[in-house]
Image 1 (spheres, rainbow, N blue to C red):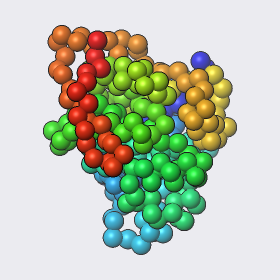
Image 2: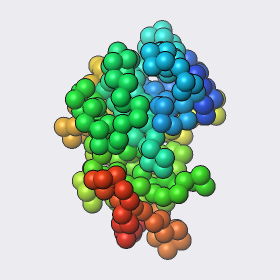
Image 3: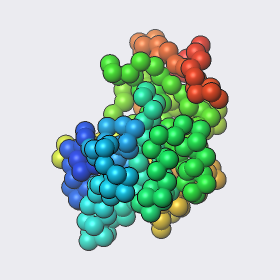
Length: 262
């Protein structure tokens, strides 16, 4: 597959945890042979850098600065730059693709809607939703929450995860025949020196627009994973058991009682 795309990354202009500007990201990815990147800064339910007290129109304008900064540089150097975001619901987070600034400006309800309503709104707008790093566990998190019914697929490889997290995610996605994606969750491109340090998707054809990527997700097209296959082979004996929970139709937790490492 000839075309590499980053699907998950954050800028310092719109994500409070970001370290690189959009321009800095764009230049590094172009240097490392990527065809394009999707800026997915933390939305208002996550670690967003935009003050929540601002009027909706101003919040959206400030939120889009990271993407716009990257796109401006991408147009100069021949790197495709697309727009998305990462919305958080506490322990579970979702990557939203296929919508734009104009859509956000007219849909303030997206900020605080339920997971089910988010999926409905995104689909109505022609987009797609991928659950980000579904088996990630951190000190600040309480539960691994699986939003199987609230997304179009799962990010099974995330460069910010440990191998065991991605091994779980891969076998979980296999069991439920989910669309699989991969991303770097890159916050700081100054630390990246080789293409192999980055995760992403590998596609047979160049994306002309973010809608092409949405179509691959929703129509179950061919999406290759730019990640070493050994990423999904964590040792089931040496690895910790990860306790996980379903998010049911009422968006409440139910223990899965399952392990997806083997």
